[in-house]
Image: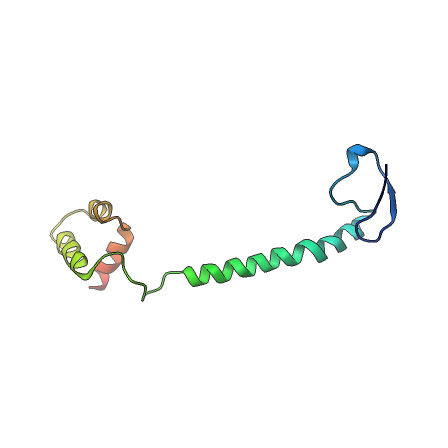
Length: 105
């Protein structure tokens, strides 16, 4: 089967079992194609994902799931000896979050 290199256009002769979506005459052409078509997209995706992760990171000013009254009740129960893990399940928030608030107040 005759086909062309995706980078330089050189004519290639390959059996049908070795014909792929992208075909190259050499590693050099493959690397050049990869750099132009895949590497930049991967880098852009990494940068985009990093920006999204940064914007979604823990924000100390983010509104809590619980109202001030709920926090007061939860903290008084935790200080009274109730398990932080049981409170976290009841209020559907993380035990670590409760421990952090306890440490701050």
